[in-house]
Image 1 (cartoon, rainbow, N blue to C red):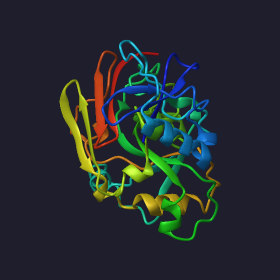
Image 2: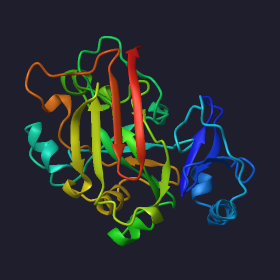
Image 3: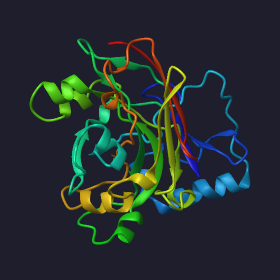
Length: 285
């Protein structure tokens, strides 16, 4: 299933994209697409049955905002330097263990919402990423197979980063990762049953129409299942939590000088096979 949330920010309602590409209203079946729904097998069954009956009301997509596909995200866990080619372009050694950092849940916005360049920013950068959405509470998982069983689905994420804040201002990476609007998510949450192999997905990103990133999750240093298993050793993952699993090569940081960092007015588009496409225009904070 392709689950999503539509409407104005803070007042989104649940929806479903059917096999024919029609947007369907789910508000008569469930209250929201959130961790509570993803952890409730009976509620998900109701959604599937309603979709199969074909009697869900159609929604007019014209002018309809698409919000983040998961409401009330608890936390966003990010994995840094998780592609061999991205580590190489930044001059970093591939890490021996996954690099973990956090983004605040309030960085999450819709896939086509405006991204704000922070005040004083000179190095705002792009990163297309595969996002994992957790569906079952995960603690101390033992095997990759167990980890995969705790995944509700997958989505496109844009891990926007301010490199000067991240690298040159001291401390942890948090200052460069948690600026307002720095985690567009969606358009859809594609349930795990429709993604048989998360290590066979192509990721692409364009800036002002120019292809900048063109990679595959096959090039991840730590595959999705290992990422989820590993993270569960250090923190409890709850339904609705999101894990951004890293970005392939092609970010501005890895380009020759002068590096083409983002500026207000730029347009970024990104997509992952089967998971949909995002488009954001940048504006000054």
